[in-house]
Amino acid sequence: MDEQLLDAVCDRLKPVLYTENSYVIREGDPVGEMLFVMRGKLISATTNGGRTGFFNAVYLKASDFCGEDLLTWALDPQPSSHFPISTRTVQALTEVEAFALAAEDLKSVASQFRRLHSKQLQHTFKFDLSLSLSLSASLGCFRLAKPDLDLIYRFYSVQWRTWGASFIQAAWRRHCRRKLAKSLRDEEDRLRDALANQDRERQRKRDEAAASSSLSLGATLYASRFASNVLHSLRHNISNLPPRYTLPLLPQKPTEPDFTVDHTSDP
Image 1 (cartoon, rainbow, N blue to C red):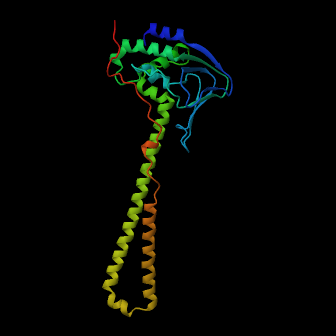
Image 2: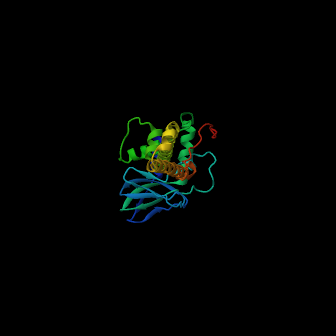
Image 3: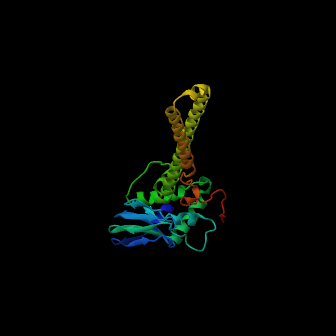
């Protein structure tokens, strides 16, 4: 990040203080600033728009940031006149010191940065993390040497981590469902083969079966009835497998800014 641009960003930062148990922002409220945590501990939680049975929470500490919903809005060449809606509720668990970057200031910096570096930003979030990490480094939180900014941003972004974890869980549940269905089908095939072999054996020994005792015949009928009941139970289990865990139930994938076209014009 250009040092002059970084200095301009730092000049726009405003120190803020949150008391214990106070709310930074609530899910569904407009996001008006991005927050860089310097001291203290917060919890960031989401219900994915109030979806029943869904809850995700992570803890934020020094060097973390929140309000990344604002980044996509700021990097949009034609942003909406309304601030983006927060997808998470952020609450201070202890007294928290942070630096806030207001939406209009972030938008101004994003516009300058996009003009200067549009060719290097094709389909990436490099501005997002370079801003976050540069600010954190300048403020003495940590330093990284030539990181893969794109991957690291997604790692530290709460939205991307939540979406990624949900996607992995959905894939795992689909895998378990397919594995269970295959196991039940294999068991049904084995029982069907066993019944077929039993029928062939009974056909071969039909003459002998006519002379066999009624007890032996009763045992054969009992075994056949038992196998039939097992097959029926297996078919019932397959038909009553839990519904497929489909992607529409996942949290919405975070939106990436489109840097394919430079919408700004230099004077």
